[in-house]
Image (tube, rainbow, N blue to C red; front, side, top):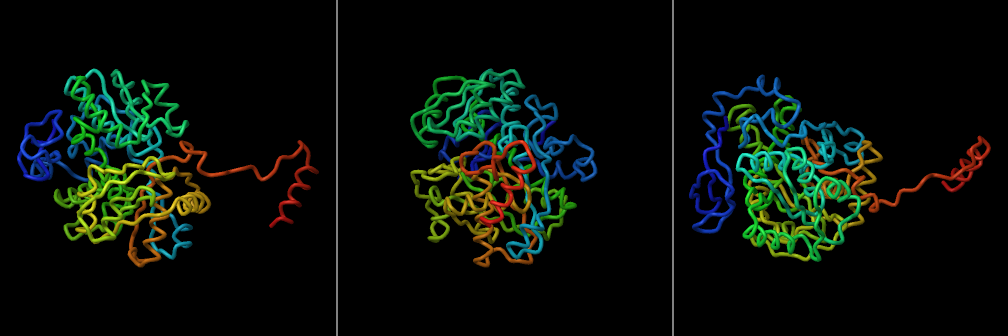
Length: 410
């Protein structure tokens, strides 16, 4: 049983029956899943959720898929870690890291994909596909294989090799001579030709709903309390908007205090920062950019949900900022050194933006802050130039000599 009632246009508010539809036939606005929240509130309790599966499917009442999800690799319920050492470095009193790199394919993309592909099975699709900068490709290929679906994933030709090894093993990878935005346009054209379920096109309204679960988990892991401020990496903007929606839904159905308010801030790389530019310029127009950054998983120059992410940030009292590639690398190293978490550049963008927003006074040092780390560093090992301390012969003297040389260098 599901509690989703329709698809609603985010612009004109017209409603449509649930189905593989992603834009309004009247105004061409994007569609969003809507629910019977009164009914959900009647049947959903903290206790029932806590008794549920150790995955995001414990929140099935707030997702548009039946409990018998068919594309389920156990995504969700990733660690929320109190980051006292990093907090001390930044002068914060209450900092937490939500480490979503520990999902089945090592990124938060497993959250939306498990929902989208389970819905694809409901709709009767036999083949699924996506445009991706890497993480989504891995997740679609893995969940498709588990559900018995064929898959095609379309990625930039210059994608980091480590990011597509798994996808190429699990399904079919197509390298395209172009950036993400060009690949996405190609997939829209393919959608008109092939009867496939495209995760970020005709399945997009359902796909995006999976991202809410990172907000649900944050609240549950904090003892059913909401944080004061969250820092979210921004690519298409869908994750940020759904984090905001997730917190709002918990308030609406009475699982957290109705007086709870969460400030939501966005993080981008300077080499692809259309949402940050609009925020800093006080504009509502998202001007497309040509990406040029090491944070390739965030390199979407024309973000589909950019306007809605901008609106969510402003409504919550947050901010959107952008950081340099050098700041991203430094932040990756800082997070690793202080908390033992090795993240890809997207996570570096989150932490670097947290540092910047704290220094600017946007993040209050007394707030309870949660930073979202969304992908594992082993997917992009070339970003950080990490080398052994020394190479030694297999004897104690060799080590002691090397240690002495190292100490002299220090």
